[in-house]
Image (cartoon, rainbow, N blue to C red):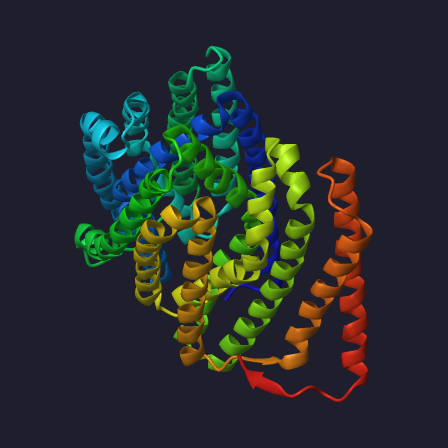
Length: 503
């Protein structure tokens, strides 16, 4: 089991890298939105929704399969078996990645005209198809580094890939004329596709050197190819269902908006404002939670294996409370900075409005990721995937019903409905697996601190949409939250112990 110090050290490293990359990505997203416009971003988002399904098929669960099978083999001292698993996974990735690439390239006409309804996406789809094989192969080596607990290699590769992508995209955009939406989209996807090749070569080189430094000895029983397929494909099948439903959902959003009376260009712009601009800002702080949540999976799996249920319950309760604090703090800052963030990053009041509307949902969204991590660590990944598939199916139905009636605000309702459903079902399953207990006052104190600091900050600092107001609101709101929380915490220490209740 990983020591507490090592756990937080690894989590802090991953969180720092993820925050830096997301920060750069947000700024870069702001820049390209200015270059291609909201309609161009909407067109790009539609293209990437189809590409996301192609990536799901190309990888087909291979990364998780490599992580679990290689880790198990090395744990038994079967180093040679681990090498053969890696080799079998490479052939698996080549087969699925190659099939996905051919299907996307030769199906680009049908997808552009019949599915996306815009011929301008055809060239971008063809260019993106070239990246599917290196993405599938990268998933193999990424899974290997997680298995051997050397995640620093993955972090370094992600930073390098991001730098290459930005450089190539900026170069491509500099060659485009103003108003050429199709050419701008080609520049964006071209930079991403070439960066994936660089990413694969770097991961492969690191894996090759890593295996040379760490001799893998010890045999095994054979059947590595069957093991890879047997583990990866069932995971892939459920991933296909969820990814397909998500792709369908995103394809239907501009269509449903147009049913409500919006023109095609305006529908694409509204879709981009919410999905490509507001949501990345709302999810920016999850870089911290995701880094630590990912590390919780092997920890929970190990404790579950030795039957340490009390320890598991203690870790889960502390993790949920910590996530609750972090999510409330993030929700507060996002609400207070919504107008400024929308105007500073995208020169859009509409983006700020969406951030403000969705910020109260942030605690649920963030906590759900922590609950999911515990479920996967406890071996309930199939149940978790089932919830996600139901979530995606409900989203498709809600998009068709609510968006024609309420426009883009209808999609805000869709997000609220599906996120709440997902969280309630996931938490209910975790409660059945572990006896979670938290103090009532421990939960109410941060909630009260958040509400009081929000009210006070809004009263003394009206929203103006500029950088100075953003900084002042962050400092005042965040500072008040911490002060009130500390005061309430001191009161709790002096008072009698609060009664606990099941979560």
